[in-house]
Amino acid sequence: MAAESQMEQLIVENVMKELAKRGLTGNVSPNQEETTKKAARPQPKSEPYRESGDDPLTIPEITGIWVPNPENIEAIKVMKQATPARIGLYRAGARPKTGAMLKFMADHAQAMDAVFLDVSEEFLQRMNLFLVDTMAQDKEEFLKRPELGRKLSPEGERIIKEKCEKNPQVQIIVVDGLSSSSIEANVPDVLPALTQGLTAAGIRVGTPFFIRNGRVGVQDHVGKVLNAEVVVSLIGERPGLVTADSMSAYIIYSPNEKTVEADRTVFSNIHRGGTPPAEAGAHLVDVLKRILKAKASGMKLNQ
Image 1 (spheres, rainbow, N blue to C red):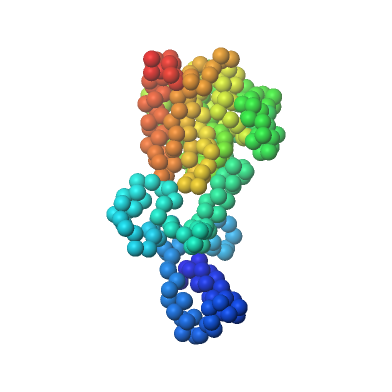
Image 2: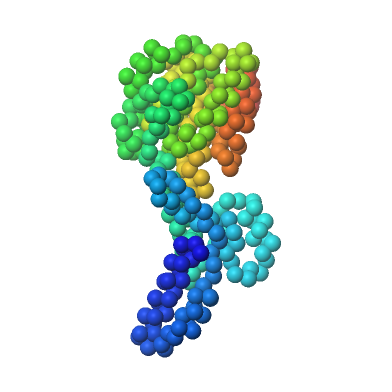
């Protein structure tokens, strides 16, 4: 039996015993205890989840329908198939069921990790990406002062001048943004599909690299330093309780000091449950061809 079901049964039994002690329900007989155990609704099956170390964590699965005797179960099934939102999980009195609460806490923890953890050095080495920093000194400053994440540090600017090809048609940068986990989950499929597709199309691709504590606007600084015709940022999206691994691609044509957000073309929700990473990479190649041909991005591309 799942750990959360056992926990729920234990809580029910202890409450009943306490009420019996106070004379509110009478004595709890062995038969009543057994009846209480049988009355406890079993929760949907849980699956083991390993994050670190050797001890598995049990995270409840909430895809099932927990509502007892629903009036229209078919409607609930349709809704559950149409969205990953937390619907049909029912309640214990006025509170969430134990399994639903544990899943909520686990998803919230993953979202927090996505924001505050750094992309690993092993990942950067495997993807052959060198690292540069923005003006933000750490995660706290990055979150409190977004403008610092839009500018490379002086050392970062010096490094890309030394290591990157100048005047590329397309410069690709990987930026942690608000989800480091999305970078490690999606870039291994997106980046090769993107670079290979562009190269096969005869488009000159600059030297990809990774920016730590970066915001979307840092692509403007990179574009001006390297004199890139187009800059593509693969950047982690703000994590939520459905997924912490969603990534976006922001594309800007010829960025300058007058660039505004409407000048950017955005392709979002790149993750396992949205647009698959490899498919996203192929799609971005087609979008970049259009942008280079039209010499415009964002709203101007659609005019």
